[in-house]
Length: 188
Image 1 (cartoon, helix red, strand yellow):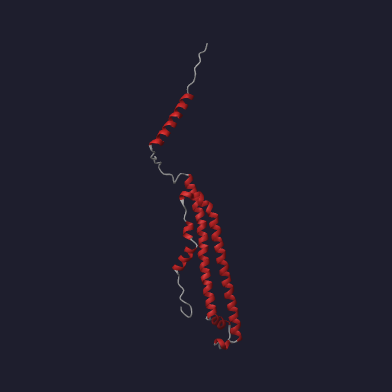
Image 2 (image 1 turned 45 degrees about the vertical axis):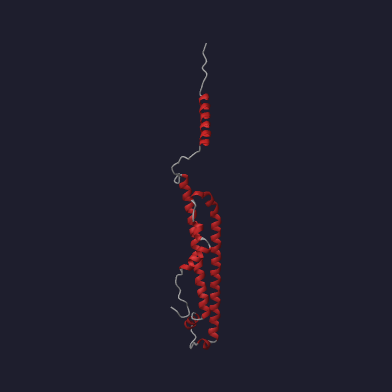
């Protein structure tokens, strides 16, 4: 379908560019070793992406309005001077068909399609951030259950550290043994 339109196809490069500019993938990653920090970051992420969504929706609404104004202006022009547009008979169908073939209308319609696409991408990001929240909740539950706990590996201690630990352990044993000694009294 040519007729003045450049062939519209799904542009993966554009999607990647939009996602890279807003760091979607980076923002969605969760660091298991810093769940507390991830939770602190979550509300700010949601605010960031809902704001982007609102901006994209506003842009889309402006594009819709511009398209409607272009359509109305062209409708008025065509009905005022149908010869300028090579119309033999002015009917609703012929006016509508003439409007959608005009360059200004095509440009505004393409801008609307692009803004709708951007809005959909950002709306998907908001949904992904919401899923991130659910994933964080589940990871915190798993952490609480010890899911991320691994086997305890003894640390290598140097000689001085071992001596300090051994001395403190001996002192603790002596205190325990001294507290367990009871003086027995003879009954007379």
